[in-house]
Length: 209
Ligand SMILES: Nc1ncnc2c1ncn2[C@@H]1O[C@H](COP(=O)(O)OP(=O)(O)OP(=O)(O)O)[C@@H](O)[C@H]1O
Ligand SMILES: O=C(O)c1ccc[n+]([C@@H]2O[C@H](COP(=O)([O-])O)[C@@H](O)[C@H]2O)c1
Figure 1 (spheres, helix red, strand yellow):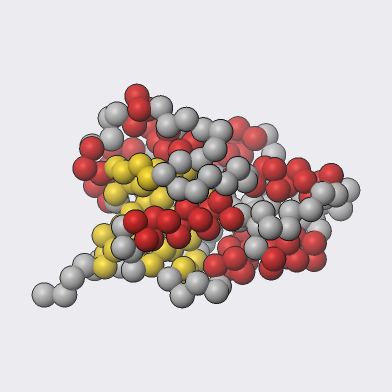
Figure 2: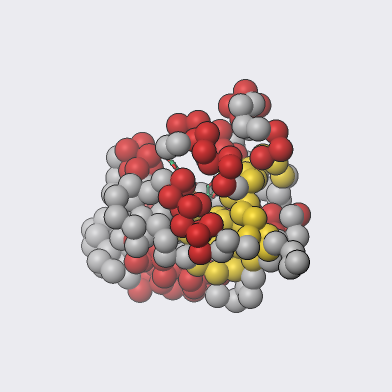
């Protein structure tokens, strides 16, 4: 009997992807001895759009930046399951699709402290825990409220402390808008992609992908 594979799933809007995301994925890969981490850019991140009151960048831009950022790591790959599905992006669909694609794999869904704390607002939350183990990574500026995750079955969730990187996509977008650098906050190729397509500069609105 062959051993089951261990696959990390890093879901995110990645607008843009930054080194906080990459370090979280790399740390969880090492901690849990994963075979690979699949990055899954959201299609329509329904909560983010509502909360931020802004349109997220076109999915193809976010997908391509994620491909560029992960290309050098042989254990990272990018999935289109969420951007190719119509309608709002729900993790329940992400995990069902990936489980169908990889029936030989145990899935580890990777989140930051902020996302994990909100998990009970996600669609079909109770069913999520049957599909994956949830890994919450520490994130500067966000406390992991034990009460918020107390109802997750204890064998289906882990908290890992990762090197603190106080980087957010919001800050990267705002810096770009102000004409400030994002070098070293995001991979070099992503800096160049953002400039080439004039993303996050409201005067120009950016390309459509
Ligand atoms: N610096 C970080 N450290 C640890 N986890 C992070 C960090 N930044 C993002 N994450 C986690 O990565 C996942 C995807 O994040 P997302 O793409 O929404 O980036 P973000 O920086 O939070 O974006 P925004 O600023 O636009 O809200 C989420 O689970 C989030 O908690
Ligand atoms: O399933 C849901 O209802 C749900 C609600 C909010 C966020 N998520 C997922 O959480 C991950 C991080 O989301 P975000 O919006 O912080 O980039 C991403 O994979 C989202 O699809 C999922």
